[in-house]
Amino acid sequence: MESLVATVTALVVSLLTLGLMVRLAPTLGMLDYPNSRKVHTQPIPRVGGWGIVCGAVVAILLWVPINALTLAFVWGSLILLIGGAADDRWDLRATTKLAVQFAASLPVVWFAGLAVQSIPLFGEHTIAYPVAIAITGVGLVAGINATNTSDGLDGLAGGESLLSLAGVSYLAYATGNTNLLFIAAAAAGGLLGFLRYNTHPATIFMGDAGSQFLGFAVAVLGLALVRPEAGSLSPWTMLLVMGLPLFDLAVAAVRRLMRGVSCFRPDRNHIHHRLLDLGFSHNQAVVIIYVAQTSFVFFAIVTMTSTDWKILLVYVLHIAVLYGFLILAEGSQRENHRAIARLTMRSQHGKDVSPILVWAPRILLETVIPLVLVICASLASDIPDDFSILGGALLVAMAIHFLTPDAKNISMARIPIFIAAAAIVYLYTENRPFLSATSHLTEAVAFSGIIAATASAIRFSPKRRQREFYSTGIDSLVALLVFLTFSAFHNISGFANIFFVIYLPIILYGCEIILVERRERKDWLPFATFIATIIFTLRALV
Image (cartoon, rainbow, N blue to C red; front, side, top):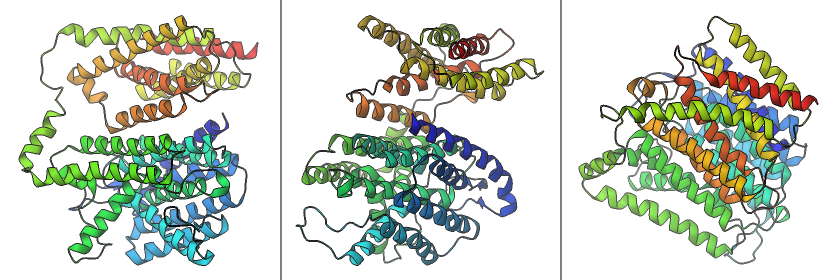
């Protein structure tokens, strides 16, 4: 629960910071302009890093016990925020950026005791401490730049980092490293506040301030996890946690050196560029990389107790499969692969479908989801007292919305409804009233029906609905995160609230479909949410 508080705190601070920085971006000159290496065509504010870092740092200072690692992490985060923001504004030289990265990394390695003094598979030799600090610092800088250079498509670097942070969170939980779990949760919360605006086509870029911080966060937390005093994890587990960006950085650097140019010179040699060149669309390239990164993180969890050789072998096999596909694809005729890529994503536009497929899923969602919210609020076996405060605030917000002339405004309705729905799903899954096989089957049928109705509503949408609700790479990221969470936690005794992670996105996607369909007809979702909020608020007070 405490880690969830850290995530929510970071999320709120991130959203507030982003709202301010987007308005200041033109004045501060922090806009990302199109060029030959970039896929966007309009200037975009690159201030997302401010929201990510400020959200994470505030949450850490509020909720994480202060120790050497905490202070080192905050130090490095702020140095990278300042240096990254300067680069976003003035486009610093590569040597200057490296100097900032080392200024953030070396004190962290020394002060937090993260230096790696022995490397498994290479004997039991101990590396001299000053040399170990230098080598570990170089590795940390490589991790920073790995995420920085992967920030080439909307949602890509953020999604990869969120998957890695999910893996770090599980490994920290499984090894009893509470502080690392809280720091990872805070970093994920700051990132979640930004990702809402980074879905293709993005309205905000994270900039170097954000991408460098995310690489730093994953690398530092990974190093902290594999320290001998932190548990029994192999140092090679870090490779799987960091996943694809680290190897992609190495491959791109080698390809540049083979062409006789500086390894710091930007080009289109990264894996996302290569997928685009093969004819895959923006979203397809992002989803392919998300799936690859999910596999890396999944096997980091699966092999956490395995030998060093097995972990390294799993990593090498991942690389062989992924880059083997790239090499074979690039060696074939490009047009064939463009045709294959087009076949993988059939268009929804212009296809005649039965009217029942258009209206039936919507009617089912508008009926079932309001009932589910009211029933869950009524059946939860216990409601903590502090939820009366949240309920009261939500009731006030919803009442104000109902009384305003612009009561049909979707944006005004969405925030209180989504927060109330999340609270209700949490209360029900945390305090489940029935634990029998029959109740589990009933829940499975109900939520499977909501999934099917939501998928059908999206697939067979009329063009009007498509303009307001369309699937993106972030939707795939949510599905992959649910898969990772279920895979990691479903066998852990006492972790019953895996159902919250599974049920919440199902309910929220269904609510979104209902909200974008709001017209002049009666809409039961806001009313049902209001009633459900009254129910759990009163129950919390009793």
